Image 1 (tube, rainbow, N blue to C red):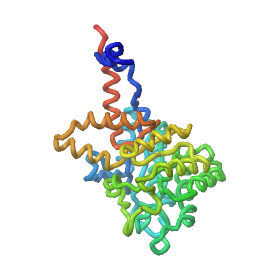
Image 2: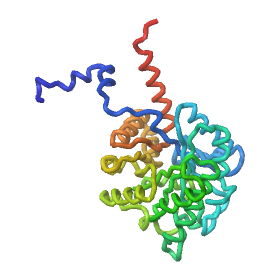
Image 3: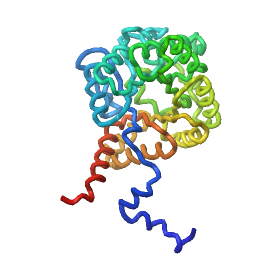
Image 4: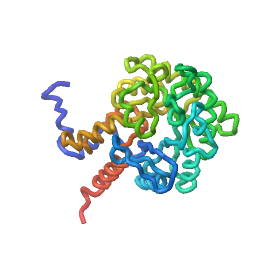
Length: 336
């Protein structure tokens, strides 16, 4: 089809046409809202590198989660900040750990809200790594039991879904086995399957106090240069029992999201991470971009690449914008 017989602008000339032929539709249903919970009452510690986000005590966590639920956001992802840390991350799987208490409260107060728990040890270890340390080596196999115990404790507390983010080999199978053995076969696993060793995690590590005290995470998180390896990682997790697979980060890895979407038939999640959020917020504050428009364009690009669901710190803002757009579309042509 060539000009002048074909004129693409014909279907761009007004908003109604553009809506009718729009290929990608972003929805509030696509959003998952990450939240940080900390011990105490009345606590709302600002996260300086993530404007608008806080470390929240459980009472304030419930208020924020309820706000998300009322906007139509179907799920939250929960990260805990413990009172104390040790080499074996004991507060990660403690019955009365901060995440376990938060899950119980959330499911009591907002039962219809889906609560997904991040399963990792980095916030709970005194060295900040995602696994048990032997010297300066992360011991993969010794870590698996603790990850499984953590996932089980979250599920017993009432979590609707568990999400292992550690990138240890074999952890999905270990978690699936322990859940099934404890009559929790109904609990789905959202696996951080292709989690890259990214510089975009900086603000999160401040928020969760989870930066490693030595070295880095390159021996277990993926090399940013690799794409084919992501397919192998995803395939392994599916074979071990993952129900949803995740790519993290999202924006620098849209090609990975697209490739994985074309390779598998399970739901695909993508994590629009803290660094992506912080850059947009910073540029908006400086007046260099229109933050709201860039936010919506970014989230749309992640959905267009193939993500079925998006974990994003923009969830509240995006939900408000999407709800506003829906109202405007419904009322724009109504005469009174």
